[in-house]
Amino acid sequence: VLLYNSQPSGNCYKVRLLLTQLGVPFEKHEVDVVNREGRQELLGDKNPALRVPVLELDDGRHLAESNAILWYLADGAAYLSADPFERAKTLQWMFFEQYEHEPNIAVVRHRTMLGHLGDYPDSETRRERGHGALAAMDEHLGEREFFVGDRYSIADISLYAYTHVAEEGDFDLSGYPAIGAWLDRVAAEPGHITIDN
Amino acid sequence: VLLYNSQPSGNCYKVRLLLTQLGVPFEKHEVDVVNREGRQELLGDKNPALRVPVLELDDGRHLAESNAILWYLADGAAYLSADPFERAKTLQWMFFEQYEHEPNIAVVRHRTMLGHLGDYPDSETRRERGHGALAAMDEHLGEREFFVGDRYSIADISLYAYTHVAEEGDFDLSGYPAIGAWLDRVAAEPGHITIDN
Image 1 (cartoon, chains in turn cyan, yellow):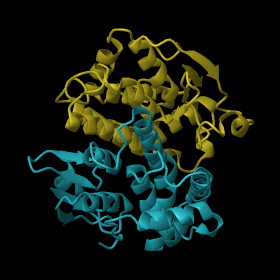
Image 2: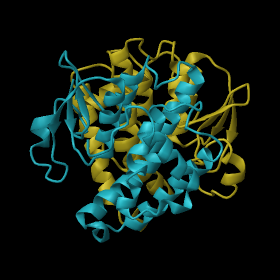
Image 3: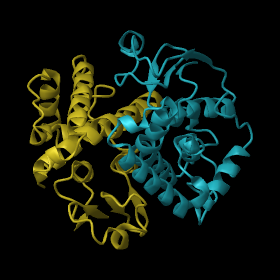
Image 4: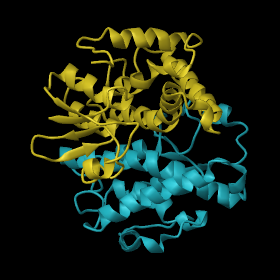
């Protein structure tokens, strides 16, 4: 398969991490996430949202949205439960990730890395909401090892991606001890790779 | 089942519509979406994001995030494909809905209905992004009847919820003819109910 990729993007890292843990060989096509010129030509017929990651299957079909790609790759494999309720809970946490977590933590991190944080009037609101998402995660993890069914799954991969680099957006994680312990557990999973891989 | 519900919320409407089309009887527990006092006490142990809808199953377990609830209810039924790629495409469009569509169109509608639109510095940015989502939908629907696999599915239910009331946020839909025709097709599906039901 071919992955339209941005190396610093947590959304793309999710897909690289799962492909690696599943042992699926893949190639990368690097896409600039700062200079967005040429996006329409490159991604227009592959993802209507014009964002990466996009996965190109060997038959030429394309799939977008990081968590939809995780689901496609993991279904039937070890990283997604076969139980209907646990599967729905996995989706619940992945929708939480895209609604409560990514738009706040990833966006603040991105603006911080580019030195543009102060240019946006909503940066502090996003920081507050990001802490709200972290607090909800910390409370949930206080009682369990992983997000769903006490096993490492794509729910963990999804939430790990931007949580483990949240400090690059100046989110202090020291107040979330259950998250700290969970980050260590995820990083200790067989086949784990870091975001620079 | 019991649905923690807000009648004007498109996210809750998705669940009411699918439950009705599936013929699943349900009760409603109305939750105030303007006055958020008491949310922690009411929803704290049911949904870490403290939002509705939340579905309470007959065994007392809870499921949150509207699109995760749709998936749980539809899996194995007529409104979700059995084909792995079509299932992933269904998720792609539902993640698109929660990332590109709902935070823009639903939020602008909510602020407009409360008369607070001008109080937020990001309202116009959200309006622009909402139009971006509508343009992407219109282009996709220009070539097909429904979002995935040319059959009515939970991807359509998800995207219908806030699109069909977008004009309550002063989004003019007349420039999106393929969306207009699709709204009519969705409303003509057997068992359809309106948002006030």
